[in-house]
Image 1 (cartoon, rainbow, N blue to C red):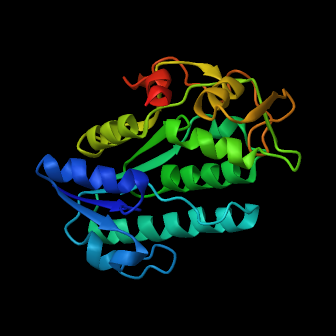
Image 2: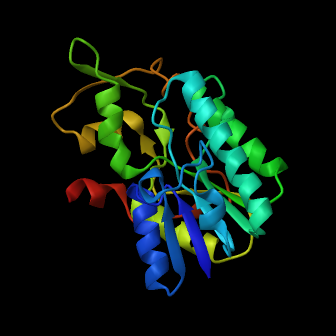
Length: 242
């Protein structure tokens, strides 16, 4: 099966290309560095020729509200148009658990816009709403550090998942039938503040219920998966121990 991974040179994409290739598929990494630019459309028609499945794991280079919205909407429109021409049968997109509960965040509004384009588009789809990655937690600490050096993060629950579990699930979805919207998360729920303390032990963490999450107000259900979600097998404590 020919599967094109948009964003296939990044953290998730490169691992997914390797896994699908090892399974015997023709997995193609599509990115500006390989001659495919989803913002301009350059290279899309060529790379999608004969493709059955497209997996979009891209992320915006800027998180400024308008820039991230422009990135996801332009990229997704170009992908879907090229897929319709090429006869692609399945579009898989990686999104975020709780995106529609956090529409006061500019980034989440951009992800919602991306999802709506896919839902209304011509290609049967699977939108994978993934919880935050283990590997992203140190970056949360960095982004939440104030001028006084204190790391102010919310004690609200989230349900982080290992990148390798995300890749395992995406590989399964890419080789299966379109499933609509699905959720995946890690096996453990814990406070964001507790996760930061564990992953970044030198951080001066302040538990702040008003901190929110990247501009969004959150509660204990905003960043956790609902009933029926697929749960990864890797545990956050093991990630921290390594």
